[in-house]
Image 1 (spheres, rainbow, N blue to C red):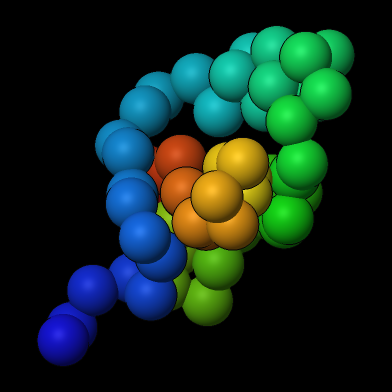
Image 2: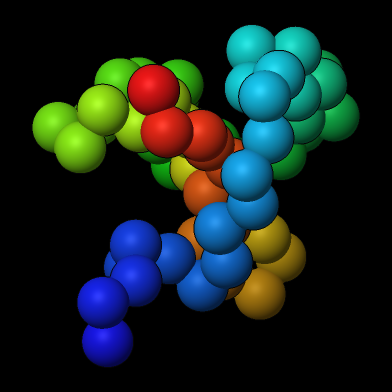
Length: 59
């Protein structure tokens, strides 16, 4: 009810490196790495089943 609005949210400290690895592997990046209005640093991918998975950390 009060989640981030994604199907999954993984907390990670190395978003830049992980995003580059996903991009090189051809993963669909729905939202590139940003700083959100909640001061989170995150990016979002879409898996093969259409689920949105976010990777981020509180800034």
